[in-house]
Length: 289
Length: 160
Image (cartoon, rainbow over all chains, first blue to last red; front, top):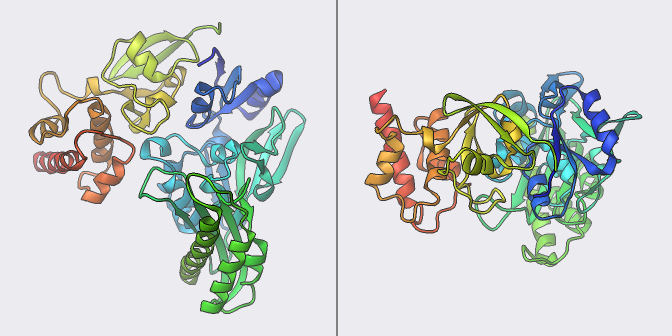
């Protein structure tokens, strides 16, 4: 790997200052499970790594029943799925964090890093999209918010400007009878990259769907929002017909490519299947929530 | 070249200070700077787990950690696993069950298995297989490894 310099600031201000000084030549370091591999492969060539794991705001999980969740960008996947609040209120996002790589990877990798890496197949991003998460970003010129469904702009590309730091993800508090689910298709049990990933978040009233959002992964150049599929559920009884219809519309929203992990046709078909199943799981959870 | 940095850490229970370049992985520092060659270099992409170490009790691939990130952390490697000449029950069971052939993956499996048993003394077989999903072995077919871990768990429970 090429020579780099390394800093581990303890405040957001220090981190932003360091990132601003080096501009495009600096990059934040969280778990390192993507960036270090990319640096060895020569895909990314930062001269400065700014380790953000010592900044308290980036390491906290803070939940308030009214204002919702603030999830620090550097919280590791293990810290997420070992957290009872996360498991209770955001089981879909929690299961996405639990699916990434091995325990070795989960002990280091973060949801914030997963998002900033910008992979179309990132497991936690469709779950965040379904939950309507907002990215809170700080740069030298102040802070701004980016909806997670607008965050990724292409493969390995994000809306972050040089020097901007993702500090936390903000997720609204779940309303009564709300829940979420994330499902991924891979051809083996563990340690693989999504062929398709589907995140669903629902609010129900009796058997009627009051609100729905659906995020799709690995079926386009960025994670996608399946708006039509979600809208088709709202106001409907969540019966077989409604779920079948939403699955079909999610498949139509997918714009996959053929690659070694699956053909476009296969991915479209699997998108519909996983959407149906994720709706059923989220609805079952929402009934109990 | 970037400035070398001094890193203070606790390694296998002992305070250790080392000097490294920021670009060096923890694996490289352990093997090349500190002479601890038990952790193996396999894939360098976090897929094989041969370089597994514990960082503050959590299992991680030392190839995907920078040496400088060890500052203030507690690192445990395979070299710290046996108590003098007395093998850890996991090591003993790996020998008894012939859970290794070429041995390259073994330190990583032992570390990942220890991380599991430290948190879950009574794992089921699926628990063991899940916890070891990040470690690849091209010789044994995994069955003997899984049996050894389950046996070691039983023995540790019986001794507790």
